[in-house]
Figure 1 (cartoon, helix red, strand yellow):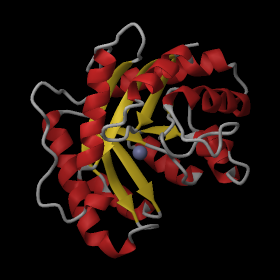
Figure 2 (cartoon, rainbow, N blue to C red):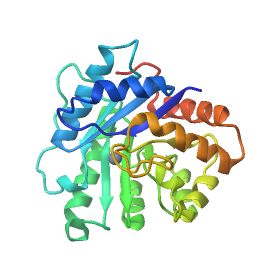
Figure 3 (cartoon, rainbow, N blue to C red):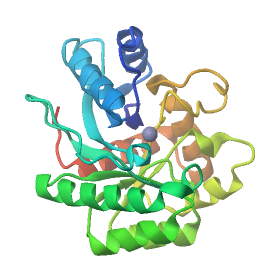
Length: 255
Ligand SMILES: [Zn+2]
């Protein structure tokens, strides 16, 4: 089985990155996308890509996404892209009114500006959206974009609208949680050519690893669980989601 963890974060200066990359490779993770969102997370994503590139025999092939998430709302500037780094996507970006409803206007402005930036760079976007369905759809109508809605926890009708706009839908380990019937319903709804899987590590470790710090190696549990509820083999589901991730990123070997 070969797996693509399409969304993981690394801690700045995390001495455990090399070991985590090694465990991921052992677990069948052949590719991953290290995702930024703040100055520290962006630096850590770039560092993880460099770490992986320096150890091609023991680490997955790693690409990165760079961007500013909703917690950076109010920032005047967009994140710089270090020289020599070619991000595979722009993100994570988006809206979260669950945790930060008071910064709505600034979140909207930052989100729209980064969709424009991704268009200028011809990159797919990695979008976070929580309790912000209408505004997310509204901004995406203003700035037509391509990419993925990550860690999807919305309803099937919300998924339908996003699929109709051409987006991929990525499912995290939340789908394995006992109370997540709504996520399972949406995860069954997404067609086989538009679904991705992710750990969103170091958060949200899937069952049976719940309570531990999450890491890319644990994507295998989410893959098996989702294959089960979709009624296909884990091998086939891993292949589907691997191919979808490559199609979304539009390249085989971007670093
Ligand atoms: Zn994330």
